[in-house]
Length: 226
Ligand SMILES: Nc1ncnc2c1ncn2[C@@H]1O[C@H](COP(=O)(O)OP(=O)(O)OP(=O)(O)O)[C@@H](O)[C@H]1O
Ligand SMILES: [Mg+2]
Image (cartoon, rainbow, N blue to C red; front, side, top):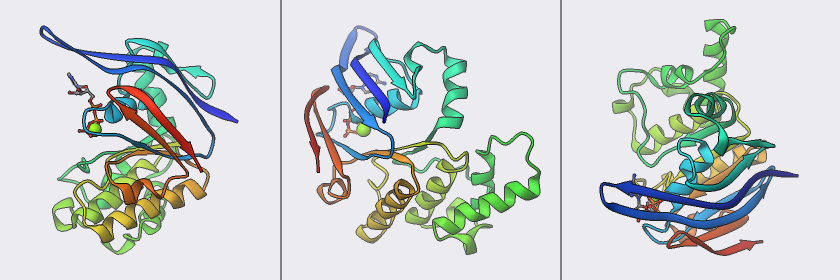
């Protein structure tokens, strides 16, 4: 069942007089429950694709339809609301809030207006358990290793139980052991039913995906499904 449709998507960045076409007519579709790596050299448009998929940014041309909704048509506020409930994002730099503990960082993302604090704590603890950090719930980001911080970021991405998980070079600054741990967590999230799409430069990491989409200069040049 089709979840995501990218239909002839173009994205142009304008900085003063300089214009860059970061994506040039990219089309593909994703079925619910897929586990996909986006690969390609630096500057090929991988991060741009993730930003468009997440609704952080909009395409210059073309349409993006997710679960029947054309998100590329929504205004900024609507897209932000849509994103909170539908997408969890993991970035290269973990983006945790330094003054909050691991538990609080996860709880902060919860969009559960009517849920009691006690239940939020319970749910956040379950998520920290999922990423193997139950015993570090009260630590601040600076008390955690890079790998641990990224695991907190994964717990946070799952906080609202979104159907889609996106990750942009989630292991760029991690050693091999942590890299494998992170991609295995993404795969576990996929096994639980999440559709997972991550970008990577790393051959080994790309090898974990069941499908690899290759970009080159903003064009989709390969789509390998195992
Ligand atoms: N905010 C921006 N303003 C202007 N140009 C941008 C912006 N973001 C990206 N670009 C340009 O768009 C193109 C695609 O960039 P993008 O970040 O999507 O590539 P990438 O594949 O993620 O690269 P990397 O592997 O280095 O992360 C590049 O030429 C880049 O310089
Ligand atoms: Mg990038």
